[in-house]
Image 1: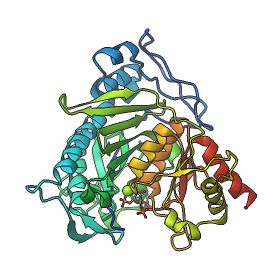
Image 2 (image 1 turned 180 degrees about the horizontal axis):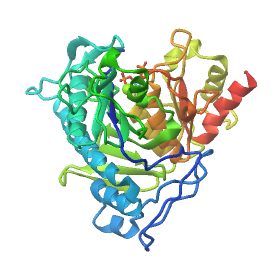
Image 3 (image 1 turned 90 degrees about the horizontal axis):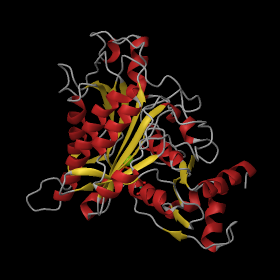
Length: 419
Ligand code: AHM
Ligand code: MG
């Protein structure tokens, strides 16, 4: 399969809003009015308490609608330490709208965005033209937030500067002090779908930067000290350190799905307004839905425990006794989005050929797992919670299943039993 370039954008910080992981919540403070409250129910395991206050817009939602911009303003009012995220999400909001337009227009005769770029990215994959264009859109959008310091992408195998004088040279590595967050991106996930007009998406994860990280102007590639290299590798954090995660889905509508560690919020793009409007606050994944979403052509090469569970779902001999339906778009954002709303399970397991599967931990596995957990679901490799894996390399792959807790548990139980 031909795949996209994936970008990792790194935004670094002076101060630390989130100094702890999800396992060790900080005290959030709030402006408490009738309109606002913290969403605390159904926190995923190992996530004792949300660290942020989430706005509730019951009345507003029924009348005029709440835009993403307004939502982020409310979040910032409730959690002043998140103020800078508002700028960042403003840029991401714009980038997603721009990408949505590009994807939609890609079918028109006047568009020159279909097909292959003719280049191969760092992972040896053919780049589609839209991979390259969407990567640029995100880079540029983030550059002008004034927060973006460093960027790495699938074609750029180390983080690169996107604000400084070398910003045009993708292979050069510099940095920007005084910024706040580390952000990771897959700008056009599932890009092999785009020529057929099928769903694609953008995945975003935001981490906190190590505030003690100091880099010198001379730090370019091998010239960086060990400490500087460590700073540049700031993307290598486990999902438990995520401050926020989001995806945009380009499909029948354009959706924006967001978590700031306190529930999941789903917006749909109102094209007439040109705004993402909140459609589902505090999304919770249903349980008991007999839907599975795998590339089942690979089943014979999967681990025996997963193979056994999926065979049970197929023939109705699993714990639920139900015969499962298969739904597989082949674009993670679309498959996870459906799973989030309808329930069920999505996965891209390892197989004999690719033991770690296909999905990348940093910019696919971890952010989508954060969203799934925040919606009351789970994500696992079969033996390990995806959120707890510390990446060793930027483009590391991870075998995974994610979705309704009951179904993910069937898989983890099978692995634990060694079936
Ligand atoms: P990409 O990021 O290069 O597009 O690849 C990831 C995509 C996922 O969206 C999807 O789940 C998977 O590849 C589908 O792979 P396959 O065609 O092997 O089923
Ligand atoms: Mg992808």
